[in-house]
Length: 357
Image (cartoon, rainbow, N blue to C red; front, side):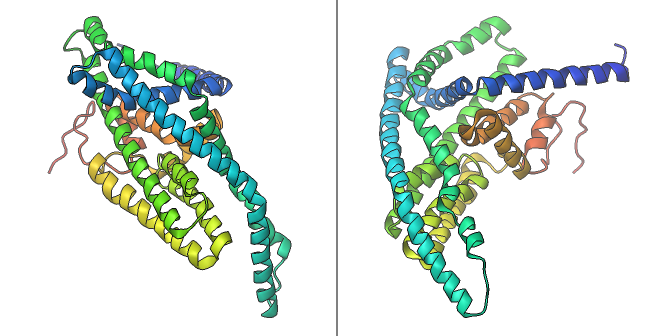
């Protein structure tokens, strides 16, 4: 086969870039529908594990799917009710928090002025504007609450996906053969995605419960709301835990002062180090993950494409893309570029030479 000329390669690159631009533009246009489909897909992947367990115990497929969906509905109803109530109460309480913060800032400015330090009060107040600081978090929570409370379409999609999942492997075997390379790659991809999402969901749940208990003990208002926020944002490594800590630490500062806020911040640090840096790598494997740059860029990209909810979905979507790249030797190089560190074993890449020991 003749080697492509530079003109042909340039043409292919331009066509690929044009197709990618059209695809991204279409995703932005259909963001509201796409968010529902993506969330339904993630829920279906998480629910596939319990459905398979029930089927192995002799439960019919339809009954197993309905039991899993019932569990999703129960959890969604509780989460939607708690988030809705807490968010409404928190929104009403923001003016009171602002007045407390202004009083504290006035005290600080007077103290600094007595010591000869002339600090512009307007600039400090703008920096610590409670409404501005919490507006982004409120938008995320409102978006998540909307998905939870208006999830009939999402659950319907999940039902059909779970029903289809029971026969899809058999369809692949019939279409490509029992020993097909495509089938092996798909099964590897499917198992990796299921394992990643299941472990990440369990770790995020543990993080959210730990944060809720911490804030409950420290007396910070709305611990349930901040626990759910920590659960959702834990899907964003590193950056998510910092964003989740800002509102409760800020609230502790307004309620109790600098000392309690410092303790709450230290508690967040301990919780996230324990679950995200100690437990999760041992369970999931240290080679699983994304580089910090990829995390940051995916956060910006998916938030731009899908809106505030895209921030929560950004890392799971990028991680699934990385797992898909890992499932094929021809795209494993791209997975290495997305990963957090340089792998020691690259002998299964096309054209790779065994590394001498």
